[in-house]
Length: 463
Image (cartoon, rainbow, N blue to C red; front, side, top):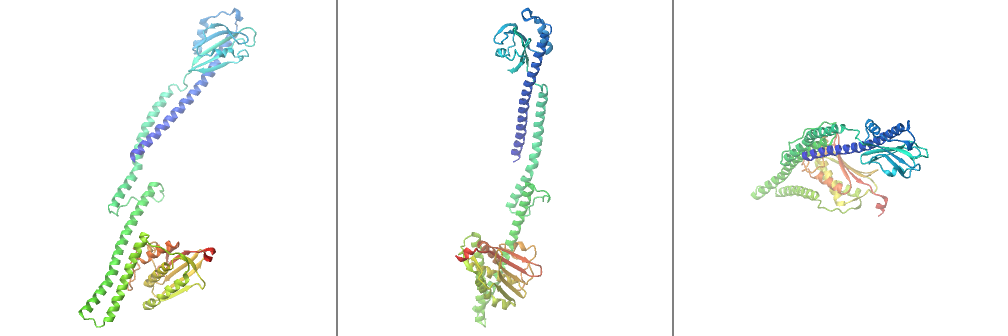
């Protein structure tokens, strides 16, 4: 990357200098031609005026080369020519002084000469001009022709410009080396950090950029640090999940093993009670294994939904009523409030029942004395709220309640704790049915788990 930045910087500087140099040369050439043409026209006018002062008639004119040489040297001209042209400016009569080679003889036939117009032009680096000495007369015209070399108005300044360009290139190389190092360093550091993270070092962090810094490099550092924090948290959650699952598996297995050994040894006085406990613990194991399988299917997206318009009020009431014995056994008052009319939503009935069951089971695990399940119709759809009067959810836990493998810090001390799978399953199922789910809590004031399903158009209900 550093090499590419260096080449790019130097290339930009060289292109800029080349464009600037070309522009200066073009403008200088145009300005030089314009200036030389204007000056040459002024010179030929001055020479013609000198001839007009005290000249004899054309027929009596005697040509003196030394005089023209003095004029040529004093004005810095390359050549001064004189020619007699017929009054109608059609054909030359006589050449009195050599005509400069840069002049187009066709211009001598221009009728503008007879009217006193000065003609000028530039040809192959030479500026030329011609003017009549005695315009407006019927006698042959005495035409003065001059030429001079076009000189670059910048002159020696071009050498200074070239030197300045070389200095600019040298400065650009030094600046490019410095900038490429400065710009590439954060990327190199991010690459090294990413390699260390890939190697398992989740303590790696990039220097935290200032809050006011919003450039791409700062965003990269924040994103990488956020990614590492997420990975570190995920590893912690995975470790916590494994400990939780191991505990939840070991507890029923220990109970089953103990009662099974007692029955095998013949020391169990009440085999019926032992069988009931073994059955209960095996059902507990079955639920845990089912949750693990469900989560695996949800992660792999290997599940199907039979979505259809359904009255979820009836389904919700039936599921909540099924938890009444469990609530009574736990000493929790389970209340349910649903609308008296149909609440229709496009859901998979069995999956919706699973959502409600998981939420109620989670609420019973944390409730102190009451758990309320409310199903209401809102302006945006249908909302299910499961509210307990437990210890509440810490603010740090709220964003992570429905994450996979997450176990809250408010784990109950007495009742059976979950493995952190139920709420993750709830979120996956609700999102698959087009809804959303979130948690609300006030520390010490209980918690509410809320599910929002989209409403239905009247046409969908009729169908």
